[in-house]
Image (cartoon, rainbow, N blue to C red; front, side, top):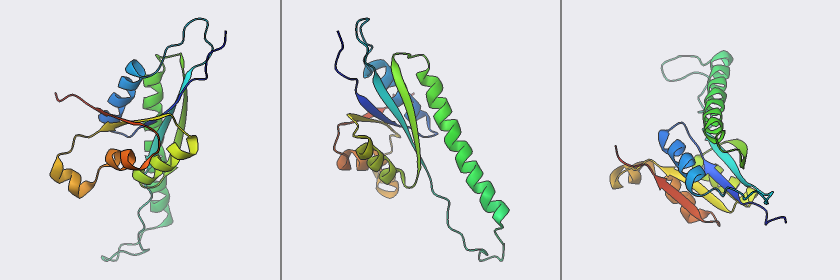
Length: 164
């Protein structure tokens, strides 16, 4: 007997421990382990928003020239960080063979990238970690999770890491 298709769950990941905690919490508490007679699986899409390269003029105010080699190094570093974040998240998912795992890396502001990706994927749920910023820090830095909760059409689960 075939069951209903699994859910598509988008999980926002970044280099911080908070997103890894949210991913682990999602795997333990949200993802459904299918029964032996079921063939469908939930699918997790790991979303990483790679910050865009800062735009520098070819010469900064001190007269320092940004060569194409330096710019290429900055791009390479950004790709390496993205690869590391996705690999770390995939390793976390490896212990859960009953879930399909995909990844998506987009360049841009995390608020926009996550919201746009969730809409394009038509996700059933967005899971995000919370950095736990206080009111003042959140007012200055903004909150990606708050922005996404207000702007995506699917339910959003914000997982707070316990204080140590």
